[in-house]
View 1 (cartoon, rainbow, N blue to C red):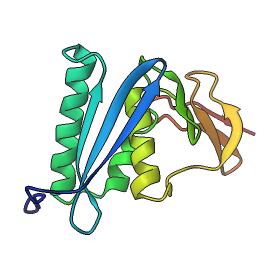
View 2 (view 1 turned 90 degrees about the horizontal axis):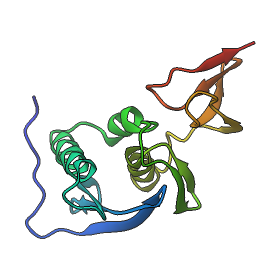
View 3 (view 1 turned 180 degrees about the vertical axis):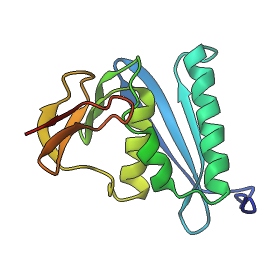
View 4 (view 1 turned 45 degrees about the horizontal axis):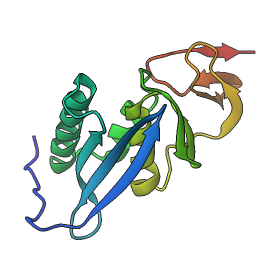
Length: 154
């Protein structure tokens, strides 16, 4: 295991307001001196709820992973496409639909810190099983949601 790289006591941060399926929240991304992501806080309007508590936990785990050297692109690749409520339309034209708050958060982080490198070329097709965007790979259509697994070839 690598050594933990802590952020300075006073640090810059980005705060982003979002809405997914009518649920409002905020992402706060704490930054290292050089601008890299070092911590994540996810807050939803309904503090004290199960969803709020789980999102706090995801933020802590993500922060620890980043501080121990796990590349953000590995985290975003695994977390994007997760599907659970609340889901639906967002207020962000770059991410018009999210399959969950986590899908939105990690897609937003990908766009902010990975220059959207994980964005797959859109086919305009939506997965019939879960409603996430589908992409084309080796003459097959595949769902972007890792947990879904929907594929159509030929």
